[in-house]
Length: 193
Image (cartoon, rainbow, N blue to C red; front, side, top):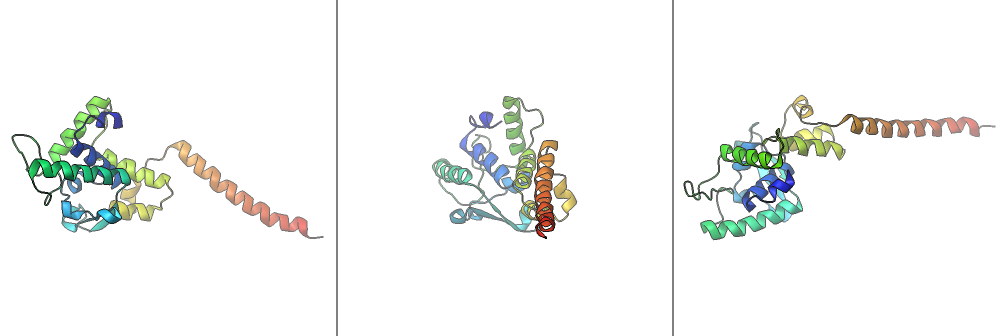
């Protein structure tokens, strides 16, 4: 999928990177404003009016997204002559300079999916991938829910897709740690003479 993305315009590559990095919903992504970015801290405070839950939250973005953001702003300035306002703008003759809507992002992802041969790729896939990766990085369910903007932990659980192998490996690590603790306690019995 990422190979298919390399042929996309800079704007679309930035959208893919931010959709994953920030676990953004489709509507949250297309409503980003240039002024929403705290580039120095690589944070984006999401405004409450742009989120599904109507709750503001802050999300981080990575180095690659930061580099793509700067490059896109330079390209965008050359195309549209300004850098304020909605971040993602149309370059088509029909809607030149107009903000992108959710359906345009959906069509972009459909095109990437087709070229990549990935039948089940959607705009929401990036959100699922990011939240699963946060679980793999040992974030707590509460932290993941906060990052995602979920009020209910059950909702967050629907986004986390750890494989049986990953769950078994976690169980083994936990069991090994518990077993070592028990062995240390039992060793005290052997030390008594």
